[in-house]
Structure formats: C-alpha cells, structure tokens
Image 1 (cartoon, rainbow, N blue to C red):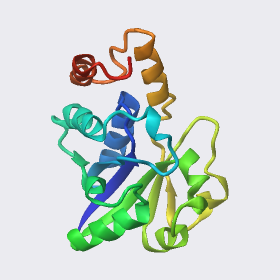
Image 2: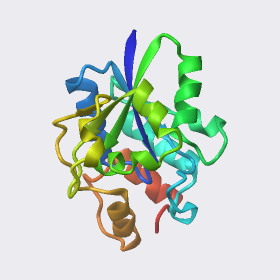
Image 3: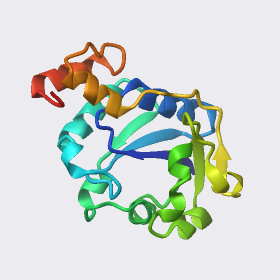
Length: 191
C-alpha cells in the first residue's frame, strides 16, 4: 500500500520552505509521495488576501514539475467551499482505497487541531507527521499516539513575507523557484 503525505495549504504563494518540508517528508519519513493539496478557501483565512485558486495551483505545478516524489492535487476544488480536512480525507479514502494517507502539518497547526471539524476522527483514523515551526512546540497533542514529531529543518519563511516583499517590489529570487517568480510577474500577482 502506497503511503501518501498530504500537505494542505493555501500556498499563497508556494515558497522554498514548503518545498523543503515536502521533500524532507517524502525522503526521510517513509512516505512514498507528498501531495500538495491546494485549499481554494481555508475556513481560517481571509478570502481577500488569497490569489485565485487556479493561479496558486499553477504556481505549485511549476514548482514541483521536476520533483519525483512531489505531486499537486486539486481535490478540494471539487468539494464544497470552505474545505474541511475531514471531508477531503473521506473523499480521498473513497477515491484511492489502496493508499494510506498521512497528514503533514506544522507545530503551529497542531496546536489548533482540536478546533477543526471532526478533529477526534482525524486523530483516531489518521497518522499526522508534524514539522517544527518557530515559536511553537505542538501543544498538548504532541504526545498523542497519532502524532509523529519529525526532524524536518526549521523554516522561518512564510507566504505572508513573500507577498509583502512582492508588494514592496523587493527581489524574491531564491525564496521561490524562478518559474514561480516568472508566473507571478506575468500575472501581476500580489503587487
């Protein structure tokens, strides 16, 4: 049975931190692949700050097109908005019954997991691999049997930082792949 890590997010825009975390998870934790699951509308984020979901999907496709173990999924584009992780997991389990799905999340997200829709079912039925985030330790769930804390390199880069840099006309070379920068420039995103 193939073991797939699901890396949910807005990826607004994708940056090297996302790519390093996904690559680490795909190569150092026993996962066969990592799928970036683009959330068209995260229930916890303001819609006004989000680029078009198809633009975010395309930036991810550009970022991972040469990566053997990284894939991009638009599964949440076909589900009701806002998307809830439990609904996506249920849908994926039905669509891919021969795959095992593992959630990937940062310590910051783990600390708020109990606020999620059907969090107890997620913790009961799925494994969660957690990567470190600056200023967080995973909270009280870090010792839960479903949780595996990983030694993923600590990333202090954020999409918020990138959007602000683009808006201020700063050079973002090396913060995201060049193909993504070219796409952002071509579409005039975040400026």
